[in-house]
Length: 238
Ligand code: DX5
Ligand code: ZN
Image (cartoon, rainbow, N blue to C red; front, side, top):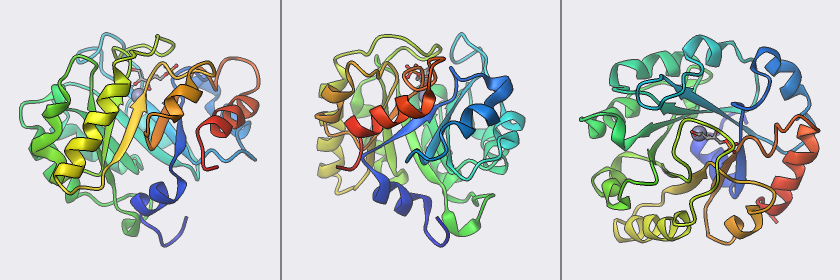
């Protein structure tokens, strides 16, 4: 990965998956991740939840920092008022930082601040700035932000728990993001996060998303490597 920016790596890898660790055995994550060695998984998705923005609490900067990996750290911040908390996740080695448009009043400022952040793994890599939208948030909310970000993620479940059912309206929302980005002349990556399973990954592959987050379909207590290969076969570079 040396010498390339995170954005260049993502553009090379997409369409691809980002593997959610929420449903892995978080107390033995290193052993769980070792099982993904030998697969083409390149991105790890950390669901940070504060119990305020979403009902669940999960992990914070010390945990994200503690995970030693060569994979990209894709940090999904489901936290209230993230502005003053960004630096801790940057210092923890985040390569991708996704912030919810619903999580603060000055969301535009969040992306301005992220633009000034330095990747703690390697300054040359830069940081990919992402915005996430809950299923109930109009896609138009991204319009004022398109010049300040590199990725838009449509959360296809109501955030807080893995293993929920995919919201079908997400398909049309992917289209809308693409239309708004094209109108703005912005080449943003489109992500879909949540409720993606072996059963629906084929349909989701047709919707034009660049990256999907999948957690419980990979870490289901059986063989994560086989699951990851299945998901990549159905949503990966052909
Ligand atoms: C939910 C998280 C998702 C979720 C994905 O709020 O943002 O990343 O953990 O997990 P699955 O793939 O199990 O829906
Ligand atoms: Zn997530």
